[in-house]
Image (cartoon, rainbow, N blue to C red; front, side):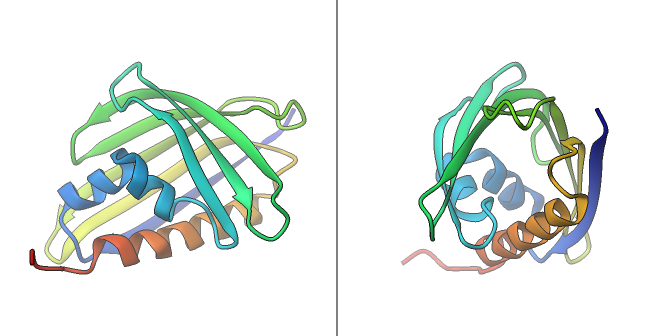
Length: 149
């Protein structure tokens, strides 16, 4: 069984702590992770090494969806999140490994995302496009500097 891999690079005008929190807060994660046209529901999210998560993406137009989950393999606050992903759909077998590296830079945070082991049924370019959309939504979440009122 062949698999696909993607790697993305992005710089955000926000500190690493804020970007990290967007990956580890269930409500925040559900707000930006699903690609355009999808909504997400986080069923479980225990962000610690060995902790598990479970979530669903629902196609807003059709109401159809898919669920997936995995385990947090490595966590370094504000620097690294590495986790596994498995689709519940038997037509999408295998385990993906996603690594998110964060680094403070002069204007905010550099993010490097790598996803390996994407099932061959998912075209690499579609996965890459989905990640681009998600990271655009992440930007809109973390970059505004809204003062307390």
